[in-house]
Every structure is written in structure tokens, then in C-alpha cells.
Length: 256
Image (cartoon, rainbow, N blue to C red; front, side, top):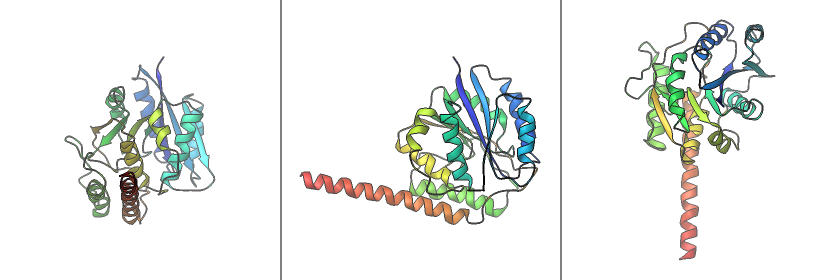
């Protein structure tokens, strides 16, 4: 029996591109024979016709699902809700985080699925050999991505190259273990915490090189305070580790 893969795509005003993304995934799905692949669109109260586009395509694709929230709660919150739905309702064995704007190229799903057969997590990485980011990215995007990853490696661990990747496959058992509480951030910085939680649970994590391409249609949803929010999350995560170390030290001292 094939394992069930659910690709989660959060959306907010993505009517210009979501149809193209779903059709691209349909093409890749036809090439996958050893997994059953569903797509879950989680829409955060789009004000355009995103939901209508998805609903129309649902008549064509039985594997396409749509869930929605009544207000825009943030990327981290959207993923938390969608992951819980994928696990509980769609019975996902593997959950994939995927962007709506085709900046994550569907062609990488095939090799990444090969690697998830022997790993708990496969991370689409822009900062390992053969991976890359757009050369024409603005300075703000580069600072958030490059500097953010360097700071994360400095504060948490140097074991991974791409802490802020939004293209990730995670096995059910590991995801259930780390989703017990809300993320510190409801926004993009959830990625940092989720990877760190998986690392702490000793998940086997593989980084697969991807070429990240910038969106052609629609508008970037990157919040203005992403740098501050990411730094806040990193400092909180490190403070948790310091507190844990101090508690362990006190216990050892009391037993001695």
C-alpha cells in the first residue's frame, strides 16, 4: 500500500498563480507511482478569486482539497492548522510544505520523495552545493534569507545550511511529536522553530539542493518585521536551551 503524501499550500490572494501551480502538480502527480499524492490548499480569507479557482479545479481533481480560515492569521498559524487537518482528516503519512507561487519547483518533488523513503525529513535547501537563490533578489530578501540562516546556525546549530527553507517534507510520526504546542511565531519564523524541534527529536534530516526561483505573478507576502520576528524566535529558542541546561545542572548538583 502506498504512503499518503499531502502537499500543503497556504494561500492569500493567489488567484493569478494558484491554478497554474495546481496544474503543474497534477503533471508531476502523474509521474509518481509509489506514493499517493493529495494537495491541500489552506486559504486565509483571500479577497480575490483564489477560493473560486481552487473550487473549480476540485471538480476535475478528486485529490485536491480546500480548507479556509475566516481571517488571515499568519503563515505559521495557517501551517499549524493545515498540518493538523492533513494528519487527522486526510491521514497523511508525509506532509509537504510548499509555496503557492511556484518559487518551489514541482520537479524537485520526485527526488525528494526518493530521499524521504530513508529519512524523517527532507529539506529543500538553497545553501548546499547545487542549490541557489535568485541573483536579482532585493537586498532585504537577501538579508532575511542569508543573514537569517547564518544567525540561526550561530545561535542553534551548524548542522543545517537552510533553516529558513519553506520547502520541506516531514513524516507523520515526527510531525505529531513536534506539533504539540503553538509556534512562537505565527509568521515566517515558524520555519526556524519547526526545524529546531525536529532536530531536538533526533529526526534524520536530509538537505536536498533546490534552485529557488522568484515569483513571476502576484505579490510577495513577506512581512515587514520578518528580521525582528526571526531574531526574537531564535533568542527565545536559545533561552529555552539555557534554562534546560541550568535545570539539569541543578538536578545533578542536588544528587551529588
